[in-house]
Image 1 (cartoon, rainbow, N blue to C red):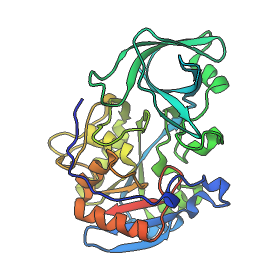
Image 2 (image 1 turned 90 degrees about the vertical axis):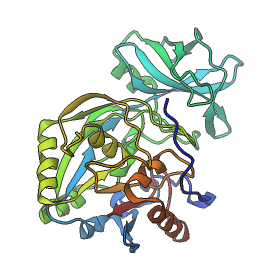
Image 3 (image 1 turned 120 degrees about the vertical axis):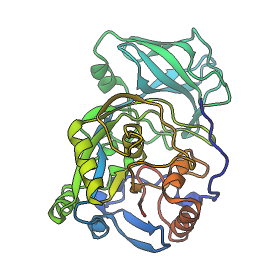
Length: 351
Protein backbone atom coordinates (compact mmCIF):
# COMPACT_ATOMS: atom_id res chain seq x y z
CA UNK A 1 0.00 0.00 0.00
CA UNK A 2 1.32 3.42 -0.91
CA UNK A 3 1.64 5.83 1.98
CA UNK A 4 1.33 9.56 1.69
CA UNK A 5 3.64 12.35 2.68
CA UNK A 6 3.07 14.33 5.83
CA UNK A 7 3.05 17.60 3.88
CA UNK A 8 -0.58 18.43 4.57
CA UNK A 9 -2.48 21.42 5.86
CA UNK A 10 -2.86 21.48 9.64
CA UNK A 11 -5.92 22.72 11.49
CA UNK A 12 -8.03 21.98 14.53
CA UNK A 13 -11.73 21.35 13.90
CA UNK A 14 -13.99 22.82 16.58
CA UNK A 15 -16.37 20.22 17.97
CA UNK A 16 -19.48 22.29 17.22
CA UNK A 17 -18.72 22.14 13.47
CA UNK A 18 -18.46 18.34 13.42
CA UNK A 19 -21.17 15.82 12.53
CA UNK A 20 -24.24 17.99 11.99
CA UNK A 21 -27.68 16.47 11.56
CA UNK A 22 -28.92 15.83 8.02
CA UNK A 23 -30.68 18.76 6.41
CA UNK A 24 -33.94 16.85 6.76
CA UNK A 25 -33.52 17.00 10.54
CA UNK A 26 -32.59 20.71 10.46
CA UNK A 27 -35.69 21.76 8.50
CA UNK A 28 -33.57 22.74 5.51
CA UNK A 29 -33.87 21.88 1.87
CA UNK A 30 -30.79 20.08 0.62
CA UNK A 31 -29.83 23.02 -1.59
CA UNK A 32 -29.99 25.39 1.39
CA UNK A 33 -26.66 24.21 2.80
CA UNK A 34 -23.98 26.86 2.74
CA UNK A 35 -21.44 27.15 -0.08
CA UNK A 36 -17.92 28.45 0.33
CA UNK A 37 -16.34 29.45 -2.99
CA UNK A 38 -12.58 29.96 -3.13
CA UNK A 39 -10.30 30.70 -6.05
CA UNK A 40 -6.60 30.44 -6.76
CA UNK A 41 -6.39 34.24 -6.75
CA UNK A 42 -7.43 34.30 -3.09
CA UNK A 43 -11.01 35.42 -3.57
CA UNK A 44 -13.43 34.00 -1.00
CA UNK A 45 -17.24 34.10 -1.33
CA UNK A 46 -19.93 32.92 1.07
CA UNK A 47 -23.38 31.87 -0.12
CA UNK A 48 -25.96 29.14 -0.33
CA UNK A 49 -25.70 26.09 -2.54
CA UNK A 50 -28.85 26.83 -4.53
CA UNK A 51 -26.94 29.74 -6.09
CA UNK A 52 -24.05 27.59 -7.36
CA UNK A 53 -24.97 28.42 -10.95
CA UNK A 54 -23.62 31.92 -10.32
CA UNK A 55 -20.12 30.43 -10.28
CA UNK A 56 -20.41 27.96 -13.18
CA UNK A 57 -20.00 29.15 -16.77
CA UNK A 58 -21.96 28.03 -19.85
CA UNK A 59 -20.14 25.08 -21.42
CA UNK A 60 -18.48 24.03 -18.16
CA UNK A 61 -18.88 20.33 -17.35
CA UNK A 62 -19.98 19.00 -13.97
CA UNK A 63 -18.73 15.42 -13.55
CA UNK A 64 -21.18 13.60 -11.27
CA UNK A 65 -20.98 10.16 -9.66
CA UNK A 66 -24.13 8.09 -10.24
CA UNK A 67 -23.33 5.48 -7.59
CA UNK A 68 -26.09 4.89 -5.05
CA UNK A 69 -25.50 3.99 -1.42
CA UNK A 70 -26.38 0.51 -0.22
CA UNK A 71 -26.98 -0.50 3.42
CA UNK A 72 -23.53 -1.87 4.30
CA UNK A 73 -23.38 -2.12 8.10
CA UNK A 74 -24.25 -5.35 9.90
CA UNK A 75 -24.53 -5.81 13.66
CA UNK A 76 -22.30 -8.53 15.15
CA UNK A 77 -21.16 -9.79 18.53
CA UNK A 78 -17.39 -9.63 19.01
CA UNK A 79 -15.52 -12.58 20.59
CA UNK A 80 -15.46 -10.89 24.01
CA UNK A 81 -19.24 -10.60 23.95
CA UNK A 82 -19.34 -6.87 23.25
CA UNK A 83 -21.34 -5.25 20.46
CA UNK A 84 -19.68 -4.58 17.14
CA UNK A 85 -20.45 -3.85 13.53
CA UNK A 86 -19.08 -5.10 10.23
CA UNK A 87 -18.85 -2.64 7.36
CA UNK A 88 -19.02 -4.19 3.90
CA UNK A 89 -16.65 -2.02 1.88
CA UNK A 90 -16.13 -3.36 -1.65
CA UNK A 91 -17.58 -6.45 -3.30
CA UNK A 92 -14.80 -8.57 -4.85
CA UNK A 93 -16.92 -11.36 -6.36
CA UNK A 94 -20.22 -13.19 -5.73
CA UNK A 95 -19.27 -14.07 -2.14
CA UNK A 96 -16.10 -12.22 -1.18
CA UNK A 97 -15.96 -8.66 0.15
CA UNK A 98 -13.49 -6.25 1.65
CA UNK A 99 -14.75 -5.57 5.16
CA UNK A 100 -13.88 -3.48 8.18
CA UNK A 101 -14.69 -4.70 11.70
CA UNK A 102 -15.47 -2.02 14.30
CA UNK A 103 -16.36 -2.07 17.98
CA UNK A 104 -19.01 0.15 19.53
CA UNK A 105 -17.83 2.68 22.09
CA UNK A 106 -20.64 4.75 23.52
CA UNK A 107 -22.48 6.23 20.55
CA UNK A 108 -19.68 5.83 18.01
CA UNK A 109 -17.60 3.06 16.46
CA UNK A 110 -13.83 2.56 16.46
CA UNK A 111 -11.57 0.16 14.60
CA UNK A 112 -11.39 -3.30 16.14
CA UNK A 113 -7.78 -4.47 16.05
CA UNK A 114 -8.15 -8.10 17.23
CA UNK A 115 -9.24 -9.68 13.94
CA UNK A 116 -7.64 -12.96 12.89
CA UNK A 117 -7.97 -15.17 9.77
CA UNK A 118 -10.58 -17.87 10.22
CA UNK A 119 -12.86 -15.92 12.54
CA UNK A 120 -16.54 -16.48 11.84
CA UNK A 121 -19.18 -13.89 12.71
CA UNK A 122 -22.85 -14.82 12.89
CA UNK A 123 -25.05 -12.30 11.12
CA UNK A 124 -28.78 -11.56 11.32
CA UNK A 125 -31.03 -13.71 9.17
CA UNK A 126 -29.12 -16.98 9.60
CA UNK A 127 -26.10 -15.68 7.66
CA UNK A 128 -22.40 -15.59 8.46
CA UNK A 129 -19.17 -13.99 7.37
CA UNK A 130 -15.74 -15.64 7.58
CA UNK A 131 -12.55 -13.58 7.85
CA UNK A 132 -10.17 -14.94 5.19
CA UNK A 133 -7.03 -12.79 5.18
CA UNK A 134 -5.76 -9.32 5.91
CA UNK A 135 -5.93 -7.08 2.85
CA UNK A 136 -2.90 -5.01 3.83
CA UNK A 137 0.19 -6.72 5.20
CA UNK A 138 1.04 -3.69 7.34
CA UNK A 139 -1.07 -4.05 10.48
CA UNK A 140 -0.64 -0.36 11.26
CA UNK A 141 -2.73 0.60 8.24
CA UNK A 142 -6.48 0.45 7.64
CA UNK A 143 -7.81 -2.85 9.00
CA UNK A 144 -9.47 -4.15 5.85
CA UNK A 145 -10.06 -7.88 5.54
CA UNK A 146 -10.98 -10.17 2.68
CA UNK A 147 -14.00 -12.08 3.93
CA UNK A 148 -16.56 -14.56 2.60
CA UNK A 149 -20.22 -13.67 3.06
CA UNK A 150 -22.57 -16.67 3.20
CA UNK A 151 -26.24 -15.95 2.57
CA UNK A 152 -29.34 -17.95 1.74
CA UNK A 153 -30.82 -15.18 -0.45
CA UNK A 154 -29.58 -12.64 -3.01
CA UNK A 155 -27.25 -10.10 -1.43
CA UNK A 156 -29.44 -7.13 -2.42
CA UNK A 157 -32.44 -8.66 -0.67
CA UNK A 158 -30.41 -9.64 2.37
CA UNK A 159 -28.89 -6.20 2.86
CA UNK A 160 -32.25 -4.50 2.37
CA UNK A 161 -33.70 -6.67 5.14
CA UNK A 162 -30.86 -6.77 7.67
CA UNK A 163 -28.24 -4.08 7.06
CA UNK A 164 -28.27 -0.36 7.73
CA UNK A 165 -26.28 2.60 6.39
CA UNK A 166 -22.75 3.06 7.70
CA UNK A 167 -22.32 5.74 10.31
CA UNK A 168 -19.41 6.35 12.66
CA UNK A 169 -20.97 8.76 15.11
CA UNK A 170 -24.29 8.79 16.97
CA UNK A 171 -25.13 5.21 16.02
CA UNK A 172 -27.93 5.25 18.57
CA UNK A 173 -29.87 7.35 16.05
CA UNK A 174 -30.08 5.73 12.64
CA UNK A 175 -31.26 7.70 9.65
CA UNK A 176 -33.09 6.13 6.69
CA UNK A 177 -31.17 5.05 3.60
CA UNK A 178 -32.80 7.84 1.57
CA UNK A 179 -30.78 10.37 3.58
CA UNK A 180 -27.62 8.78 2.10
CA UNK A 181 -28.63 9.12 -1.55
CA UNK A 182 -27.96 12.06 -3.86
CA UNK A 183 -29.91 13.47 -6.80
CA UNK A 184 -27.64 11.42 -9.07
CA UNK A 185 -27.85 8.09 -7.19
CA UNK A 186 -28.81 5.50 -9.79
CA UNK A 187 -26.44 2.51 -9.66
CA UNK A 188 -26.38 0.81 -6.22
CA UNK A 189 -22.94 -0.16 -4.97
CA UNK A 190 -21.38 2.43 -2.64
CA UNK A 191 -20.75 1.55 0.97
CA UNK A 192 -20.85 5.25 1.75
CA UNK A 193 -22.51 8.19 0.03
CA UNK A 194 -20.59 10.23 -2.57
CA UNK A 195 -21.71 13.16 -0.47
CA UNK A 196 -20.56 16.11 -2.61
CA UNK A 197 -23.67 15.59 -4.75
CA UNK A 198 -26.08 15.79 -1.83
CA UNK A 199 -26.92 19.48 -2.30
CA UNK A 200 -28.25 19.06 -5.82
CA UNK A 201 -32.01 19.23 -6.33
CA UNK A 202 -34.11 19.26 -9.49
CA UNK A 203 -34.35 23.05 -9.19
CA UNK A 204 -30.57 23.45 -9.03
CA UNK A 205 -30.02 21.06 -11.93
CA UNK A 206 -32.65 22.82 -14.06
CA UNK A 207 -31.02 26.18 -13.37
CA UNK A 208 -27.62 24.86 -14.40
CA UNK A 209 -28.97 23.24 -17.57
CA UNK A 210 -30.77 26.45 -18.54
CA UNK A 211 -27.47 28.28 -18.21
CA UNK A 212 -25.78 25.85 -20.60
CA UNK A 213 -23.84 23.82 -18.05
CA UNK A 214 -23.20 20.22 -19.13
CA UNK A 215 -23.43 17.14 -16.91
CA UNK A 216 -21.16 14.13 -17.48
CA UNK A 217 -22.09 11.05 -15.42
CA UNK A 218 -19.39 8.65 -14.22
CA UNK A 219 -19.54 5.75 -11.80
CA UNK A 220 -17.31 4.97 -8.84
CA UNK A 221 -18.49 2.74 -6.01
CA UNK A 222 -17.01 4.06 -2.78
CA UNK A 223 -15.86 1.82 0.05
CA UNK A 224 -15.53 2.73 3.72
CA UNK A 225 -14.33 6.28 4.28
CA UNK A 226 -12.66 5.82 7.66
CA UNK A 227 -9.22 6.55 6.25
CA UNK A 228 -6.91 8.19 8.73
CA UNK A 229 -3.61 10.08 8.50
CA UNK A 230 -1.16 8.69 5.96
CA UNK A 231 -3.60 6.09 4.59
CA UNK A 232 -4.11 6.15 0.84
CA UNK A 233 -7.34 4.94 -0.80
CA UNK A 234 -7.68 1.29 -1.81
CA UNK A 235 -8.97 -0.06 -5.17
CA UNK A 236 -12.56 0.84 -6.06
CA UNK A 237 -14.74 -0.13 -9.03
CA UNK A 238 -15.42 2.58 -11.61
CA UNK A 239 -16.81 3.15 -15.10
CA UNK A 240 -16.38 5.94 -17.65
CA UNK A 241 -18.73 5.64 -20.62
CA UNK A 242 -17.68 6.57 -24.17
CA UNK A 243 -20.27 9.37 -24.16
CA UNK A 244 -19.02 10.94 -20.94
CA UNK A 245 -15.43 10.69 -22.17
CA UNK A 246 -16.42 12.46 -25.39
CA UNK A 247 -18.33 15.18 -23.51
CA UNK A 248 -15.36 15.93 -21.28
CA UNK A 249 -12.79 15.82 -24.09
CA UNK A 250 -14.87 18.18 -26.24
CA UNK A 251 -15.22 20.65 -23.37
CA UNK A 252 -11.47 20.53 -22.70
CA UNK A 253 -10.76 21.24 -26.34
CA UNK A 254 -13.07 24.29 -26.19
CA UNK A 255 -11.36 25.62 -23.09
CA UNK A 256 -14.29 25.02 -20.77
CA UNK A 257 -13.71 23.93 -17.19
CA UNK A 258 -14.10 20.36 -15.96
CA UNK A 259 -15.55 20.53 -12.45
CA UNK A 260 -15.59 17.29 -10.48
CA UNK A 261 -18.45 16.82 -8.04
CA UNK A 262 -16.63 15.06 -5.23
CA UNK A 263 -13.27 13.39 -4.75
CA UNK A 264 -14.76 10.19 -6.19
CA UNK A 265 -15.35 11.97 -9.50
CA UNK A 266 -11.75 13.24 -9.56
CA UNK A 267 -10.41 9.76 -8.89
CA UNK A 268 -12.55 8.30 -11.68
CA UNK A 269 -11.66 10.74 -14.44
CA UNK A 270 -7.98 10.99 -13.53
CA UNK A 271 -7.79 7.18 -13.51
CA UNK A 272 -9.00 7.08 -17.11
CA UNK A 273 -6.84 9.95 -18.36
CA UNK A 274 -4.14 9.27 -20.92
CA UNK A 275 -0.72 10.85 -20.90
CA UNK A 276 -2.00 13.07 -23.73
CA UNK A 277 -4.60 14.58 -21.41
CA UNK A 278 -7.50 12.85 -23.15
CA UNK A 279 -10.12 10.91 -21.20
CA UNK A 280 -10.79 7.34 -22.33
CA UNK A 281 -13.69 4.98 -21.65
CA UNK A 282 -12.90 2.64 -18.78
CA UNK A 283 -14.48 -0.15 -16.78
CA UNK A 284 -12.72 -1.86 -13.88
CA UNK A 285 -10.99 -1.10 -10.60
CA UNK A 286 -8.85 1.95 -10.00
CA UNK A 287 -5.82 1.96 -7.74
CA UNK A 288 -4.88 5.59 -8.43
CA UNK A 289 -3.56 7.55 -5.46
CA UNK A 290 -3.67 11.33 -5.86
CA UNK A 291 -1.49 13.39 -3.57
CA UNK A 292 0.05 16.85 -3.78
CA UNK A 293 2.80 15.57 -6.11
CA UNK A 294 0.30 14.33 -8.71
CA UNK A 295 -0.29 16.49 -11.79
CA UNK A 296 -4.00 16.53 -12.62
CA UNK A 297 -4.67 15.88 -16.30
CA UNK A 298 -8.42 16.45 -16.59
CA UNK A 299 -9.79 18.21 -13.51
CA UNK A 300 -9.89 22.01 -13.30
CA UNK A 301 -12.13 22.55 -10.27
CA UNK A 302 -13.88 20.65 -7.53
CA UNK A 303 -17.08 20.72 -5.50
CA UNK A 304 -16.54 18.89 -2.22
CA UNK A 305 -17.40 18.83 1.45
CA UNK A 306 -15.00 19.76 4.23
CA UNK A 307 -12.54 17.07 5.22
CA UNK A 308 -11.28 16.11 8.67
CA UNK A 309 -7.84 17.22 9.90
CA UNK A 310 -5.10 14.99 8.45
CA UNK A 311 -7.61 13.11 6.24
CA UNK A 312 -6.14 11.51 3.11
CA UNK A 313 -8.52 13.47 0.87
CA UNK A 314 -6.71 16.68 1.79
CA UNK A 315 -3.73 15.44 -0.23
CA UNK A 316 -5.98 15.24 -3.30
CA UNK A 317 -7.29 18.74 -2.68
CA UNK A 318 -3.73 20.03 -2.46
CA UNK A 319 -2.98 18.47 -5.86
CA UNK A 320 -5.77 20.63 -7.26
CA UNK A 321 -5.46 23.88 -5.33
CA UNK A 322 -2.13 23.92 -3.51
CA UNK A 323 -1.49 24.28 0.20
CA UNK A 324 -1.78 28.08 0.41
CA UNK A 325 -5.22 28.08 -1.25
CA UNK A 326 -6.50 25.32 1.04
CA UNK A 327 -5.15 26.90 4.21
CA UNK A 328 -6.94 30.16 3.45
CA UNK A 329 -10.13 28.29 2.56
CA UNK A 330 -10.20 26.18 5.72
CA UNK A 331 -9.38 29.16 7.92
CA UNK A 332 -12.34 30.98 6.35
CA UNK A 333 -14.63 27.96 6.77
CA UNK A 334 -13.81 27.57 10.46
CA UNK A 335 -14.11 31.30 11.13
CA UNK A 336 -17.55 31.37 9.48
CA UNK A 337 -18.82 28.18 11.19
CA UNK A 338 -19.25 25.94 8.15
CA UNK A 339 -20.39 22.39 8.94
CA UNK A 340 -18.13 19.40 8.25
CA UNK A 341 -18.88 15.79 7.20
CA UNK A 342 -21.32 14.18 4.78
CA UNK A 343 -24.41 16.15 5.87
CA UNK A 344 -22.53 19.42 6.14
CA UNK A 345 -21.81 22.41 3.92
CA UNK A 346 -20.00 22.46 0.58
CA UNK A 347 -16.86 23.99 -0.87
CA UNK A 348 -16.37 24.97 -4.52
CA UNK A 349 -12.66 25.17 -5.34
CA UNK A 350 -12.08 27.15 -8.54
CA UNK A 351 -8.77 27.74 -10.39
